[in-house]
Image (cartoon, helix red, strand yellow):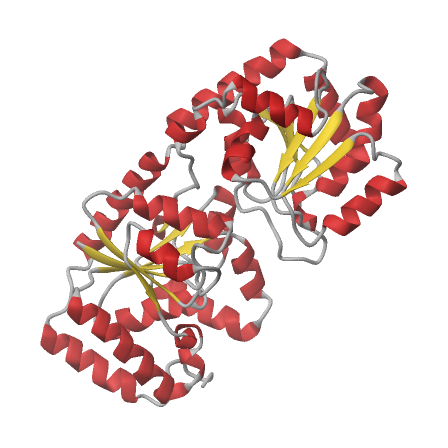
Length: 415
């Protein structure tokens, strides 16, 4: 079984989507997967040599061929056909609906190779705001064999675009259970506590890229109310990003410098250890007003849970798929500092409740979100797609391909 993942971004670029594809496809068994990406971020040559799956660093033509009419169509199809001839494909995976989904659609229209589109929430909202992109997105959705959503929220967005419910399949992000069950040794944790002056103090932990939608500013706004009850509390913010300067100014304006620590980016080992320093995990993600930025799922909530932490999360986007309200933590209004503070205080003042929620969260993360379980779900889906679309004969491929490549327009009233 040979399949191709076409994705506009991939490792070593750092990001949730990149990690999602890495973990999902490296956990597939008995499947030959090639990854095609134009992404040249970082030391990709060295990365590719050590990577377990073959990576084809393709030209950025993959992202814009459909804007160039027949010349772009011919050039890009030729590259794809060469990949197909070397290792005949029976399934194509499209990392996002645009631009990657257009490549899946091209291969379906010509060679009859079925394609699966992956959706994460933000990009669907973004495409809907542009009439041309919305037209292309709906075109890709209409011909896809299946559309994978990372949460129920994203799935509902896709269905609202007209995709039949039976074509939408939820495959959430997962975690590597073996990795996260390893507790760092005591000396390592002690050194990290000392580095950030956390000894014997309650710790509210946030982990993530510092963006407005992550809600760090709302947790900072809630902190004075928490400190009124637990004055020794420290808010440990792990990660970096474009919102850091604004957040640091907010801390200064509220005179919270003694209670907030910005660590910046951490190594993988320090990051895993940081979860074991926390008392409560808080990430009150929201969709900023007038923005398409949204939390499609939130893998950090599972990471916190598997390390035994209860979470306080924003009731927004796909977060309710990751957090069971009242069981693994609390879902709160992400715009309301008072509600955020109340949830944090409730957990800080009740250790048995923290431990109960942390344990339930740990058991749920292990039972439902191991990457191997996610990969089995994808493997089952791929088998069904292949059964439904056994492939076209060579004459049929030629009969479909030539007229399509010669056609002046690929979408009526658009090109």
